[in-house]
Length: 168
Picture 1: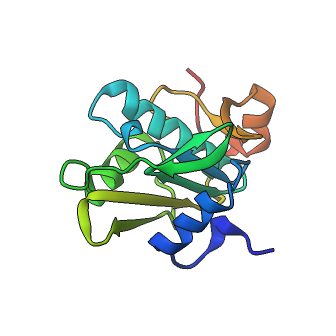
Picture 2: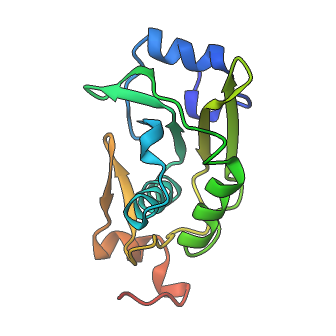
């Protein structure tokens, strides 16, 4: 089976197939409705937490613009690309996670070319520079279908002691 989180390109047909096949969230895939992106500090922290968790784990994708039901892709819940641009999302990620994540890609997808009906697929590699610190000064990892705080021993195992990080 193809690793859906490692595709070289994403398009509306691929995303539609995720919904039609009720692809499940997992350690590598997370679905978020367009409302998950907001200019509020709370939503920015959530983006930071989720992206850093994937980088601190085995990598994966977060799809902003697909809602989930019972942890399965359910329907499109688009992002308004006139308000939340790819560049805005890149800036949130780069300014809220300590240590930039090399190789991170954002695929902007427009439904029939409509900017107001956008989906952003954020492809996050497993990072060799882990652990990455999120905006709330915590380290996260993926566990099943969610982002959870890392235990101290897990942080140390990722090389914390040799990278001059300090825990808050």
